[in-house]
Amino acid sequence: KIWDTLRIRQRDSEYLDLREDGAFERTIEGIRDNFCQHMIVDDGIAMNKALSENIFVVLVGILNKIPVFLVGKPGSSKTLTMQVISTNLQGKQSAKEFWPKLPAVYLSQY
Image (tube, rainbow, N blue to C red):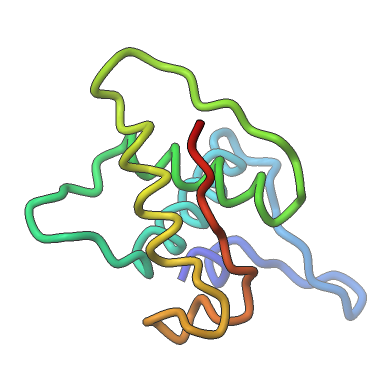
């Protein structure tokens, strides 16, 4: 839905109209929310803003092969973020049909 509200047409090409105040932020939040809606999380885990932002940043880093350091206070969803990512990004064995086209992720903790 976010794309439909932000798209405009000009000379047979489509692009996002980001001239309005806050349009870029709303676009990024919409993309983040879309990714997080497809994440499988265990019962009792809330997809709060901190967790969804961490997941989005790590996911963007993985897809673009950019190293990401998750830094934060204890309890700020760093470990949970990696557990959720590794549970969902399993390549062709992913549980939801949204994820099989993305690479499988294997955690190596040290």
